[in-house]
Image (tube, rainbow, N blue to C red; front, side, top):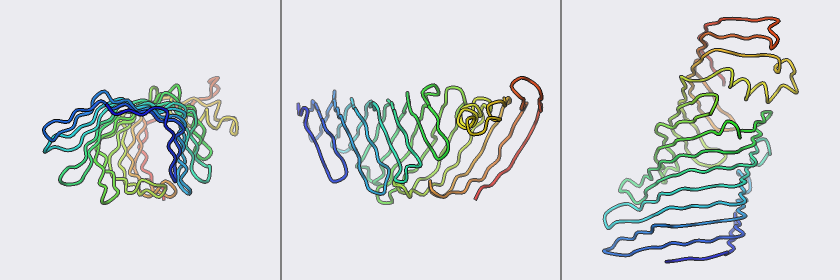
Length: 273
């Protein structure tokens, strides 16, 4: 068993005020197996000038890792983040009160040098400022199911079928390529949903976020069923989007039913550059 308790770690771009690790392991026949691992960290600060900053009050990992003589090195387990925070250098995108848990598995040392990964993350809490949008995701509890490969030589992530699930708004599927993992990451993603619920989407992303600045938005109610296909290319700072949206049994009305528009059927191609 290898273990360390309450150690402080500091590097050029990060600080961890408290770090504990316990790793029971076995060595036999040119293989190593570590099961029942426990890693805990407190007071994590990633301070990378010009890039996204990240902090967390507590983080933990429980899992296993190992390697057989002719096989890849595998890691799998469960993780948890308590009171996380992130922000972009210009402060236009800030996330606070991040609480997340999930599981993942990955392998390295394959002959083609790719690192396959698979995981699931449940976000139990997040207060997000993104430009003029602000939302509290605590009630939505988004779930992200992800699978793909990382290619170290190209610094490229190839996403297979990835699902993003919201409690009241439906779910979306995406796949594609992300080249580079920093602020200037290049995106080439295909996104689609057949289960987008316009009422819940409008309430969360538009009405609740902007009704103070635009009171009329707080008096509108939306209904219907919709679907969306979207291709996203570019970076987080500058991107283009092209796709189509469909609306069935759509309706827009004033909250006291003074007026109403609908039902509506609509197919809308769009392109933003």
